Length: 310
Image (tube, rainbow, N blue to C red; front, side, top):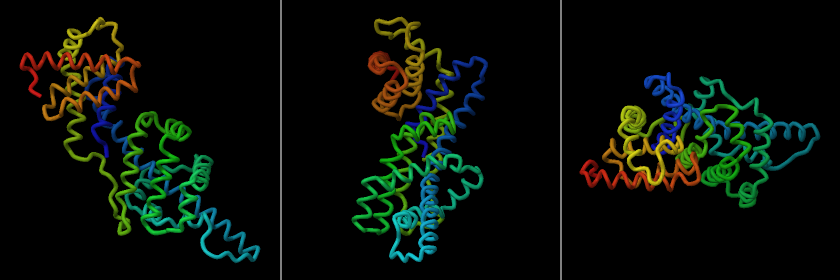
C-alpha cells in the first residue's frame, strides 16, 4: 500500500524534523520514519473500519424500526432504507474480513467515541443523490452494491474537512496521509469481487521489499550526503543566497538531489515531478518554480561533467 509518493513525503517530513532536533541520532530518526509509515497503514485499516461502523448504524436503526413496527402491528414488505444499506453485499464481506476483524481486536480501536459523527456521516450517505439513485434504480446486484459504496466513500469521505479534523485529533501522524490513503481505500474496494471470502487480503504494507529498502536508503543517504548536496545547492542558487533560502526548500532540494544521484533507475522526470508537487503544498508559492530551475541547473552541470548518466 505504501507507495513511493507517500515515502517521499514522509522522508521530507522526517528529515525536516531531524534537522530541527540536533540531538537525535540517525538510528532514532530512521525508526521514527518506519513508525510514521506504519501509522499510514494503520490509517488505511482504520478508514476501512468506518464502513463497517456505518453498516452497524444501519443495522441498529433497522432493528429499532422493526421492533416499533412489531409493537404497532405494522406489517411492512421488503427492506427499509436502513435494511437495504445494512444488507449491502460488499459491506457484509468487509464486516466478515479476517484481517479487519483481527485489526479491530488487536488495536482495540473503534469509533464509539465519535458516535455522533458516524451517525451524521451515515445520514449524509443516505441523503446523497448517489444513494437515492441506487435505490430508485433497484439494481441490488453485487456490482451495484460495491460501486455505490465506492462512490459514497469518494463523495462523502474524501475531501471532507470535518472528517480531516477528526483524523487529526486521532493521530498527528495522520495529518498529511489521508488524501493518499483514501486512494488506497478506493482501490481496495474495487479489488473485492462477489467470490471474495473472509480471507480476502487487503493491500500489503509495502507493495514490494524494494519500496521498504527505498525508504530507508533515501532517508539515510540524504543525511550522509548532506554536505555534497548542500554544496551543489549553494553553487547553483539563482539570484539568491543560500542562507536566504526557505529551510523547507533546502530540505526538498537536498532530498531530490540525493534521489537523483543515488537511484540511477528512477527517471529524472519522476524525481522532479514528485518533489515539485511536495514543494507546492509544503513550501512557499514560488518554491516549486525556484526548486525546478535550481535542480535543472544542477542536473545539466553534472551531465556536462559526466557525473550524472541519466
